[in-house]
Image (cartoon, rainbow, N blue to C red):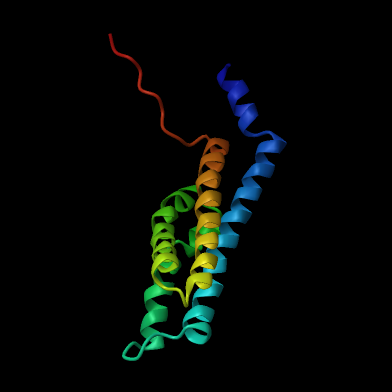
Length: 143
């Protein structure tokens, strides 16, 4: 396959549709966490005595602010590194599913949203990077 054939494959209408679907999936998970976390920690399961709601919301919402601009503007690099932040919510949800019977369903919702974010962001970064011609170049074999 020539370089031009590869480029044409990466810029086909089907590929553009996949890119848009992956971006939508990632944003649904990402923005869904923005909605779920305040509802969870303010109304449905407020923090225990001794912890302020403001502190808990800061702890859970501030990490989501770091990739906000890049996620909204569609930067493939931001989608790639935002997965590290996503893992924070993924691990939190798995821990609560196992440890807290009272918050199990909220943690399950968090897990689903984190999985949507992770899957969508991973594939979006890959497909959008290919579309833009970004990526790791193969090393040439030396004699």
